[in-house]
Amino acid sequence: MSQGKKEPLLSQNNKLKTAKSLFFVITLVLVFLAGSIAGIGYDRSRQTLDLTTFWQVYHKIQDQYVGGAVDDKKAVEGATKGLVESLNDPYSSFLPASDKKSLDEELSGQFEGIGAELTEKDGAVVIVAPIAGSPAEKAGLKAKDIILSVDDQAVDDKTLDEAVDLIRGTKGTTVKLVISRPGRDEPMEFSLVRDEIQVKSVTSKMIGNVGYIAISQFGDDTVYLAQQAVKELKASNPKGVIIDLRNNPGGYLNDVAPIAGLFIAPSVVVQEKDRAGHIEQLKSTTVPVMPDVPLYVLVNDGSASAAEILAGAFQDYGRAKLVGVKTFGKGSVQDIISLPNDTALRLTIAEWLTPKGRQINKVGIEPDIAVADDKTDTSDPVLDKALSLAK
Image 1 (cartoon, helix red, strand yellow):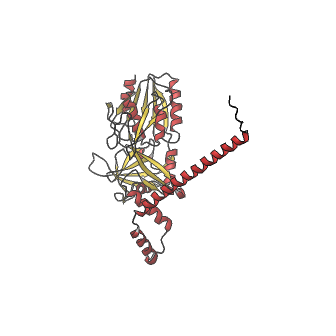
Image 2 (cartoon, helix red, strand yellow):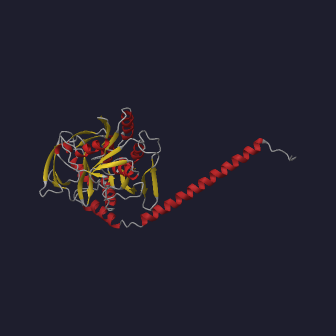
Image 3 (cartoon, helix red, strand yellow):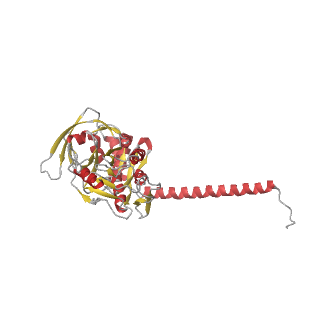
């Protein structure tokens, strides 16, 4: 046993305090250095941008423009918008406050307009899918229709967001669209009355002894509604379950894993590949509610993005048969980055791959069982095929 003098407790506390103080100081120094390095990198990136022309134009307008001084807020938004448009990526855009508000409303399931998801493809404004029960669907608009003009304004020189702004409007007002439809020689004209679009993202029912779940988009309430639907259907002991993803344009990526997890064991649902080639895996983590019930997923050319991710995961694992036609083929991931003044940047940050590494972008997913999606008010061949398989 040591005969050395025991240090008082106070001294040990002082040592601990000293160590903590040193750690705090070192942490502050490291944070300062990291901030300095980041600041230097930011300053260097700014120095590489030659904004001489921009400032020359700005001052010329301020000095000579007959219409008066520059609206600085609009000038900054316009310049930022142009910067993002220079990426030539149809899914990346600067969102002014009004556009950010519209996006939030859409994903919440309530907005005013015609009820159609749009995208830009090969320089054209294209309908991804009309929303069920919307003015767009009732008028007969279809996935892959190309919008040529809105209220006699051509959209071939407009960005996607500009085209959306023209089409959206107050409930009860009318908008005229001229579209080009693949397979038809002449343009088609549609007159639609805008309405309040309320989208319940998940609906379910029993069709005989088969459970049916329709997911119209992946929004704020989708995971909860899907969980409730599966729980209720399980109580009916269905012989099979059909998940209808037709005309589902996508939405929140993070909705997909928990919904997939209702039917598959904890597994990789999607892989995200960033610009550096790093791959991040998004996994389902819950015990499945229906791990064994036969599963059939309905898809068409309006099934896009998150809808394709869910369908692709089920197909990769052999968990479901996909019935219908090839999907849209949107294989990129966007992040919504909040900016000052309620604006936002929607930026493509990754491409997504199926669990087995399949690329979907501009390719789409082929169904296991091909059935033409010729749905009418009185017939639905794709659903009928899935029902016959399930029974």
